[in-house]
Length: 53
Image 1 (cartoon, rainbow, N blue to C red):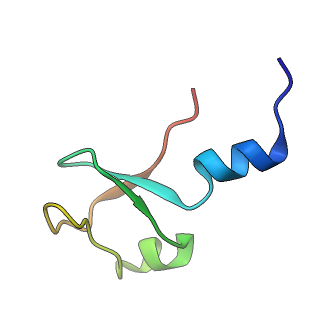
Image 2 (cartoon, rainbow, N blue to C red):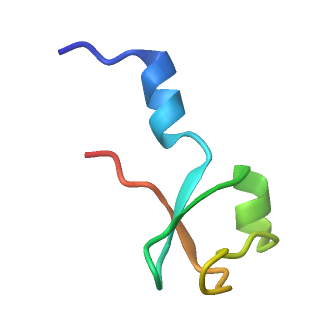
C-alpha cells in the first residue's frame, strides 16, 4: 500500500506520547525540546515522538 504524505503528516507530525502515562499531546517540536510542554494528565515534561510502525 502506498504512503500518502498528507496522511503521514496527520498521524505523526507534532504528536508526542507521555513516557509516564502514555497519553498523546500535539505540540510543536521546538517547544517540546525546550521543555515548555507538559502532559495534560500527569504534568510531566518527559515526552517522546509517536512511534512509526
